[in-house]
Image 1 (tube, one colour):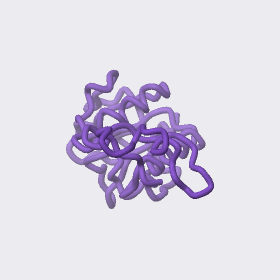
Image 2 (cartoon, one colour):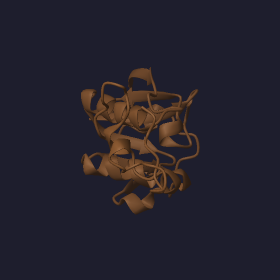
Image 3 (tube, one colour):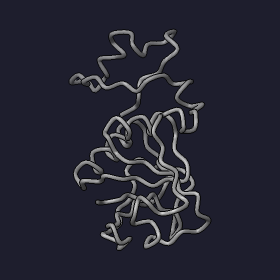
Length: 154
């Protein structure tokens, strides 16, 4: 089972999508590698790149200290095991097994942190761009001024 850990230097990051790096470990907690987090300082496209990266790497389990409701919902929809780490300063070798003490399994998006930004900007646009680069959703009024929602700036 491949597990993903959001890392900030050599510690588990406080927030999943704000981690600087992503570390992959096996069942024994042995590192399989690290990559830069594509969602860091990014918009919807970066978060989608993170989800795609996880699928490509065949991640089955994600460990977090904190995660937003929207991202947690997306991970759970993909049938990933998401666990909140309650240990103070865990070492990766302590986190290889899902049965390890100090891990809380998250089963519902409501267990994540509500996003103030998500409420303000509305849903991300997932429509095609035209030749000029404008999003079709904006043209169709889904993100137009006055609707209360903004289009993602991909």
